[in-house]
Length: 286
Length: 313
Image (cartoon, each protein chain N blue to C red):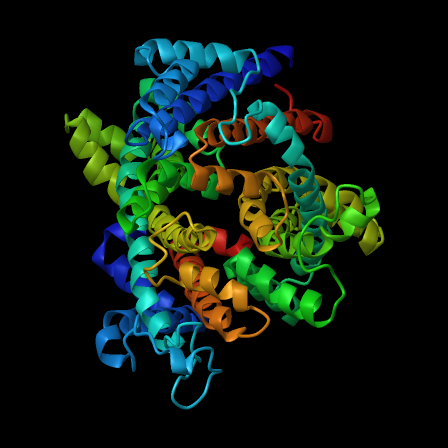
C-alpha cells in the first residue's frame, strides 16, 4: 500500500498499468471521448441545438452520422456536446466527494472518539439508494448542473469516507506512525504525510468508480426529468427525449446509450486495472 | 449473543434517527415557502396560511423537528398534498409493483450470478472465466433505463413476447399482472447480477484454496461435493452480504426502470412527487426505503449467526 509514495514505485505502477492491454484500451476510449467533448465546437458538424424541421427523424447516414431527432437536430453533434456535461459532472463529483470523504474518513479512522459518530452518519447516508437521495436533494436544491454535482457529491461522499476510514484504521497501527508520534511529530503532519499518502491507492481506485457511478446517476436523473435542465444536451436528457420515438427512430436513444456505456465501461476497466496494479492481493480475487 | 443482538438493535435505532434527521433537513432545504410551492401560483394567501398551519410550518424549526420525530415514531408519515390521502396509504397502494419487481429482479440476479460466479472461480483463468467477468463488467456499465428501452423495443414491441408497458388493469388477475413484470425484472436482474457474479467468484476463489478443500479432495470426494458442500457453503457469508447490498442498487434501478415500463410503483410515485413538489410523499418514500435497507442489513447480520457457526458474538 505504501507503493504510491516513492517515485520508483510510481514508475513501477505506470509500467504495470501499461502492461495491461485492457487498461490501455480503456484509457484510449476515455481519451477519445474526453477529447471529442473538449474539441466539440471544432469537430461537431452541426450546432447541437440547431433546429432543421425539414430533416427531422432522419436515420443515420452520410450527412448525419447518427441521424437526427424530432426537431432535426444532429444526434452526432449532440452526443459529442452532451459528453461535456456528463464528463464534467463525473469528474466534479469524483473530486468533491473524494476531498470531503477523505477528510471525514481520516478523522473517523484516526481519532477514536470521532469514529462512532462519523461512522453512524455514514451508515445512515448509505441507507438511501443513490438515485433516490439524489432525486430528493435535486428536488430541494433545484435542477441545474451545479446542483446535480452537489447532490451526487453528497450521495457519494459517505462511500469514500468508508474506504478512507478502513484504510486509516490499518495505517494508524503501523510502526512508522508510532515512531512519528514518539518523535513528537504533530498530529496533522502524521495525518497528511504518513497516513494520507499511504491510503491514496484505494482512494484513487474509489474515485475512478465514483466517476463512473456519478455519470450513470446523472444520466438516470436526467432521464427521469429531475436532473439538469432538459434543454441542456446530456446523454440522459437525449435518451429521455428519444424514448417517445423508440419504435420509429431508435437511433435517438441508441447512440447516447452507447456513449454512456462505453464511458462507464472504460472507467471500470481503468479502475480495475489501477486496483490490480496498486494492490496485487486484490487482483487475485476480483 | 443476546448482548450482540441488543447492541446491533440499538445501532439500528441510532442510524434510523440520523436517517430521519437527514430527511427533515433535505425537505427543509428547498428554497421558498413549501406551502406556497405546493399550492401553486393560483393559491390565495389564506390558503397558504391554512396549509402552513396544517403542516406546522408556522412553528419554530426546533418545535417542527420534535413534532416530526414524534409523528414518525408513531408511524404517521403525514398527508399527501396531491392525493389528499395519508402518505402511508399512498405508499402502500404503490408498493406492490415495486416490491414484486425488486423480488423478481433479485431472484433473477442470484439465479444468474451464483452459478456463473461459482463456475467462473472454479475455471479461473479460462475463456469462460474471462468471458463471465467481461460480461459482468459490461452489465454493470449499461444504464438500466437504456437497456429497458432497448428490450422494450425489440422484445415487446418488435417480437411481441411481453407487454410493452403498464401493470394491467386493476381487475386483472395476479398472474396476468405478473406478466407485465417479466421484462422489467429481467432488465434489473441482468444489470444487478454483475456485482453478485464478481463477489461470489471472489468468495469462492478464497475458499477453494483453503486446506479443508484440499483435504476433501485428498479423501477422494467427488468434485461436485467438494465445490457445493465444502467450498460454496463457506463462501456464503460474503455472498449474502452482497445480496443485501444489492437491495439498495435494485431500488435505485427500480425507480428508473418503473419509469421506462410505466409501472405504477414507488419510483413513479417519488418522481411524480418531485415534479408536483409533494414534499410529504418524497419524505415518506425516503424514510420507508431507507428504513427497509437498515432493517435488511440488521436481518443479514442476524443471518450470519444462523449460517456460520464460527460467528459467535
